[in-house]
Length: 381
Image 1 (tube, helix red, strand yellow):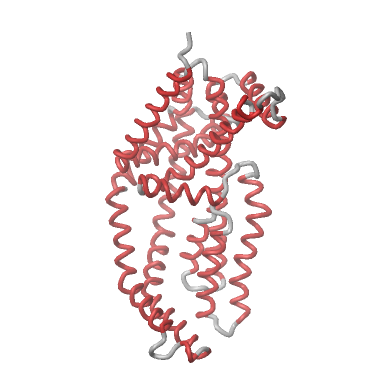
Image 2: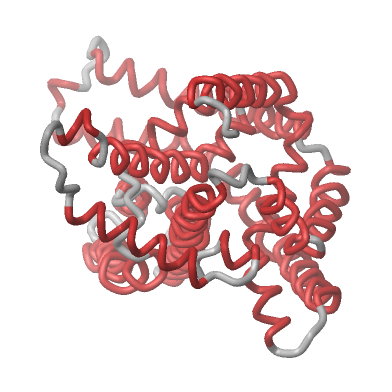
């Protein structure tokens, strides 16, 4: 005999509350395991593809691990030192940039830039603060990050966790499927497929978009000779997952620096602006439609809200988990709305369910009926 719905709701509420408290208390302790699990989830489709090509699971994971080591070694040797050097130089050069801005304003708006002007005082204060605090802020961030993600975690624990989880991924999914409440198993599988589809479309797809655009911006800005182009390109690519924000932030910084560096040479200033316009066109017309798709349903405001909330609650761990949790909550919200539209509370005396919701449920039921393996039941691909 099934448990009453009220008792089931209480049990699941207690489980959710305990999980939330554990995440809040453990915080940084579970960070390497979250990172390892995220890496295993992201790389599982690659391992599945290698298995379909004839490799065993162990050999597939070994090939992935070797590739990851080579990529990481190349980044350490070639990219990361340059990023750190350019970031440090940008912090040291910032006062000169503010001084140039002050001189430019004084030349064109002399009334605003006299000795008693508020604008001049603010620019002087900002320049001095950046020079005095810039290095301190960077060192503080690095030392704080090392307190959470120390070298042992970065170079040993996370890869080891990822490898073990990746080897046993299919068995873990099958075991979780066996533990599902039988009454709710089809619904949970349907939700799991939707969550996986959303995460695959957004996290994997948008990650590729960020990587491609960041590389494009960095290389293009370096080719036109813009100082600190690599840092600006990396920053623009990093925040590209929020539509238009990456191009806006990177464009403002790049064009601002170009105005100081190429003042009077409008061809190069236009080239810098054209790089970001072209990047937006490539993202909107090619990369995002092909790699992310149009049915993810994650609004930029929702992402910003999730980053703010989970960052405030769980710190660095929350920031890392904000995007996948926001994607998952979006799936659950759509499921709850669908159930509400099929309830008597919404329909009243009208027995006809909404057409779109009926088609969605019928499609999910058909997928459940046609699914053979536990992993296939959880994955939409």
